[in-house]
Length: 430
Image (cartoon, rainbow, N blue to C red):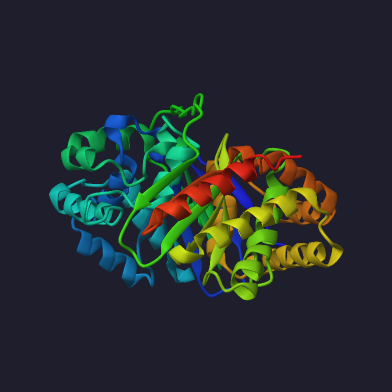
């Protein structure tokens, strides 16, 4: 099992290293504890906007081209992602260039120029337009589902932001936001692959030791989530319907956390998992159907996502609802249970060949205060029973709380039938 080493520098920066001596690359990820849930309404999209701006150049590499050339010279390529709770900057490097790669990230995080804002604004607005059709109607099912699950909260705002706010974002707002959240106490640098802990810690000291910032940060509290609509239907001219079905869940670290991760695999862990086996392999109703977990600090969701022809909508929904009724009410048979558990354990082993998975497990885990040690995970998975999974399904996957989003050329008659199916499903609790 991969070992995890951690050091906290005098300025509060946390540095983690997961050595994988058998590999021929190292992965560096820098996690900043800020995302869309930290934004007020008049800041909607600023976390993602700032992420983009850090690639426009730094004091040491004054243009985006010079910065990218510096990454490529080390065998890397700069990339980043923003979600509701974190912003992550990451790249793969040749092991000999680990320290130099860390220096590039140190320059980006500490000394961004935040220039060329108008060019980046145009790029972000183009990206944001992908969520709308030609009539200006929002067709992104993820954004629609977030509004159903967490209405009236910051989690209901799309990560990419509000178009009007993005159009008026200015450099001073970005500088203020950077100063507030981009501090060593609110950052984790994680390195996995062919790298030694002492070398990683020494490089971090060299490149980050002068970084200063406030000790505390404002934690974004979700607050009360008021009950809202159970479904959203959005008319669009696509050839198929995009369907999302979701159940609100407790947040990370609840008593059901591991069981929900296993249940997700039982539903959507390959062709023989329940959703794929029934809707694709047996009935041919869809090309692909997935169940994914979103696990946040104090809330979460299990979301089923698939595409289907309009004429097959009601049949597909009947089958999905039946799968969840069976999951709540029936015993999980030994063959299925053992297969899912075995494959989960195999995936733990496989992850040790992927440094990106290691920095996610330990780096992201550190920034959100949810480090899941691999050996602890292994022992916990082996101790789970089928009856415990059923109990978690009954308690967490509540049909009365189910939410539905349908985007595409739906038919009014099918909408009425599907809404009745949703009502019947809500009444299936026993």
